[in-house]
Image (cartoon, rainbow over all chains, first blue to last red; front, side, top):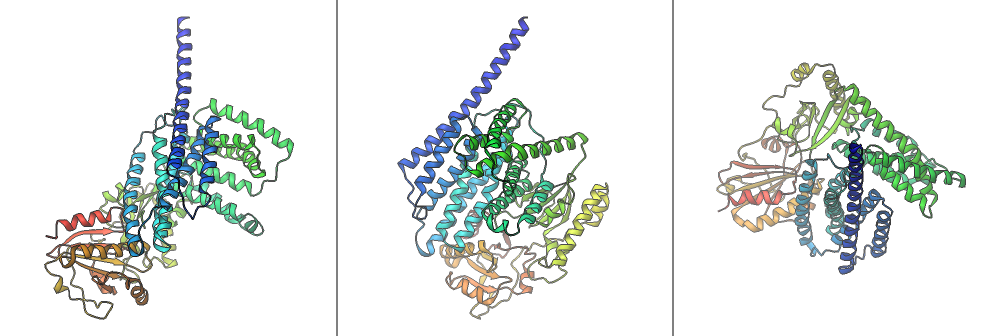
Length: 359
Length: 244
């Protein structure tokens, strides 16, 4: 009998500890948002190239706060990543680099310093022990880190081909993501289940890329051109993450690409479907909370919940619908394939390309 | 992209990994000096030399010139073959087939005795370089990062004045483009277009920018591939020990 009490007490303690862990993370996120907002108030960013900077950043702060208030931790982090990247980009964009021929060397000096710092962040993350980190947090960290090198390369390209000031914006975006990575790595957010097995998603990514290419025909390619651009960018990011062995980040981006691809052909939802969808998503979130570490799916479940809980646009309904159907299914299949591969333990061959990352 | 394409033909069997030059343990283990290189498991199957070097024509590397579609197709076929050999447990065969000769990547140890004319048509007399450290930068008009390095070399020359010689040699670039790009840059740099024999004198230059640093005696002190983030620090540090 006394053991039953002891077990019940242990379970209660663990449950409280898990909740307080999440609570701590939420507090940390709130504080980070507050700090960012305060910095913007004390030192506003006035950039002629971004006349609506204040409105856009204000709206992003509001939505990040809303997500954390609704206990959508991962969604608030997604928004924080965008916010830090945008704000730091805007901040860097206002820096005066001098005039004429002195501007480029000034840019180069700042770029070299930023690149050294970001390289150090990258090295810290690559050697990090992920044992207690939720898969979703790892996916968000990897995704942000995976965008740093292309942004830095792009920043240099813009500085040289258009103007050093243009390069500063992209460099700032990369720094903002570096800041986000460091913040995520400091979060008190413990893992609540067993990690999912991970592997390269290259075959899946290549198949989806082929499907996207095949779908890119008029009138769809004309009517939905911005969607194709976004979809291709997501796929490119996923492929780069996969090649860099950032498999959780690649899975997160791949699932987002699956969702974006589905939107191309999904009709508007009717009232009946919408009602059903709300229940389905509520059930999905409850299931995910109680299972193994399915937190990468939680990122999407949180997004879907947010999409159907406000004055949703037709696209938000479509997105939530696709998350509840295709994204969940694809994630389960991918993870099952990985688990099967692990069970049969067939050794995979590794092909390594050693390349130059900076030019 | 081509490596990724081949890897994707073997779903579940082959994993594609991309590693950065300078941070790759595999490349370090094999003493690879340049980039790109390709490994199947722990077998080096293509080194930078296989993709050719500046100043060399057809046949200078297994897949050179790399822009040629036939060479790219050959690379894909070879890579598939290598993967299949490993999958069949025949790593021994692959290692034998792909034995990389020791002299595969040529890195020079001394300032070569090159003869070139600068962009104004005057001969570059390297005898006059004697007793001073020399920086030679290989670059191209189509290489974006090269441009900022060239600007910075102008600053470097201003800093060290006559105590340092800087030469910037363009490869695979049209004369007009070279002239137009360099007209606003430092006049104290020896600007020239490197012909094929000159490029070959400097060993295997598989990518631009590549920077050679020679000490006062003409011995190679450092070779920098690409434009790493700490390029300026590395160059200054090396020069501080050489310029007195």
